[in-house]
Length: 88
Image 1 (tube, rainbow, N blue to C red):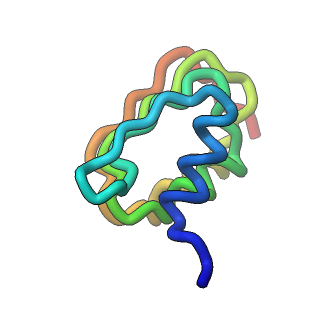
Image 2: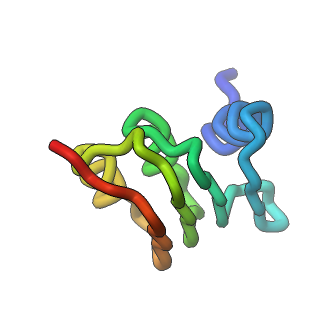
């Protein structure tokens, strides 16, 4: 069987040094991406079924397209974005 999305994404994020929090069921609920945020990463995490909080700061690797992916995040309640210039 295929691994759960949270397990796969969580492992990749932890290996990259990203801070994450999970609930008792192991579902990712909070991610502190910091400067590691890219459009591709936002696309991957937008499908996490329990993600409630996302923090992004001091990155120059995002475009408006990256944030469009987050519109599909079904449970996202809080998005913190600091010092992130957006270019086309």
